[in-house]
Amino acid sequence: MRSADEARVLDAEDAPAKINLALHVTGRRPDGYHELDSLVVFATAGDRLERLDRGPPLALAGRFAAELETLAPADNLVLKAVAALGLPPAPLRLDKRLPVASGLGGGSADAAAAIRLLARSAGAAVDPGAAARRPLAPGPLADEVRRLGADVPMCLLGRPVRAGGIGERLALLPGLPTLPLVLVNPGAAVSTPAVFARLERRDNPPLPDLPAAFADAAALAAWLAATRNDLEAPAIALEPSIATALGLLRSRGDCLAARMSGSGATVFGLFPDEPAAARAAAAIAAARPDWWVVATIAPGTVAEPAATA
Ligand SMILES: C[C@](O)(CO)[C@H](O)COP(=O)(O)OP(=O)(O)OC[C@H]1O[C@@H](n2ccc(N)nc2=O)[C@H](O)[C@@H]1O
Ligand SMILES: Nc1ncnc2c1ncn2[C@@H]1O[C@H](COP(=O)(O)OP(=O)(O)OP(=O)(O)O)[C@@H](O)[C@H]1O
Image (tube, rainbow, N blue to C red; front, side):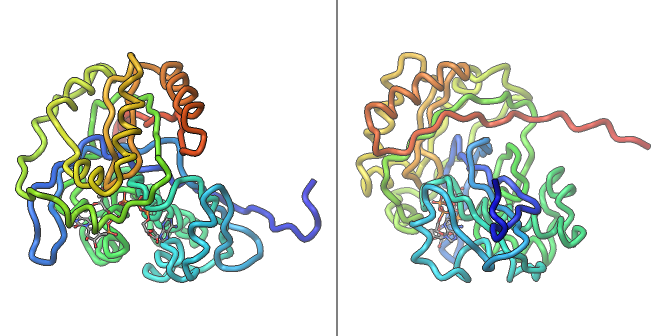
């Protein structure tokens, strides 16, 4: 039972993990940021942000809360988003379930969840419904969102996309099946700028053409075979345990594809169905009890409801 002085949860938002299924680095802008061409999906695994009836501006809970406690609350991307967009502050609690600096865009997902949550409580100064249906229209709001981090616009959308530019040019992906995945983080935080700095080539070709739809996870895996994550080799050079994690996924006979997400160190394995993913996750967790291992799904593309006149 809830004690009399315990805060009450008024509302909550999920902050799904971002997974780069493929990531090609195609150029570099004069400001040092890299041009990307990336296929991105969002998992049901993620952080969770709650709005409370009382408490400090941001309380931390969950497995990875301690890693954020060294950060001043104002530097947490949740409160940075609130300040940058001028959203009405409210007591918040972040359940930090995703490893920090792990290539899953956790901080960006938290910022996006804060925007959705507080926009809702303010009567939608930022229309979260619209954000869920289409990429943010260019404009001052989109600029503020992008300034929070290159991954924030895609996290605000939270649906399968092909991302271009530095990650802010988003095209919704039709025809993607729901993907059974295993996420494995070998417990090492990898610095995104350090990984980009180690790239040997920055002028790689874009992703190959996408078909209108993929029949299943195996069809997507066949397409992925002609793609890469260009950040994987530099990240492995900094953190060799990434290669060990990939090896464990690939040693499963039914793993369709295994690759690093974002700038690492988290890797994903794609499996034909959820039971296969659950078996792989259990085996890897048993072999490496100190690692973060989860079986999850990335929901596929939901058909748009027919427009009404
Ligand atoms: C690698 C990805 O995770 C792929 O989705 C993202 O591009 C990174 O997104 P993010 O962590 O939100 O990135 P930011 O916080 O904006 O940038 C962190 C640092 O990564 C480098 N960076 C990031 C994005 C990008 N397109 N080019 C870059 O070179 C820059 O050195 C930058 O200072
Ligand atoms: N709520 C937050 N969650 C995680 N990191 C945060 C948060 N707020 C601020 N940060 C800072 O942002 C940095 C990047 O964290 P994050 O977990 O978003 O990285 P990432 O998963 O590697 O992102 P990406 O995939 O975009 O490279 C951390 O090192 C941390 O200092």
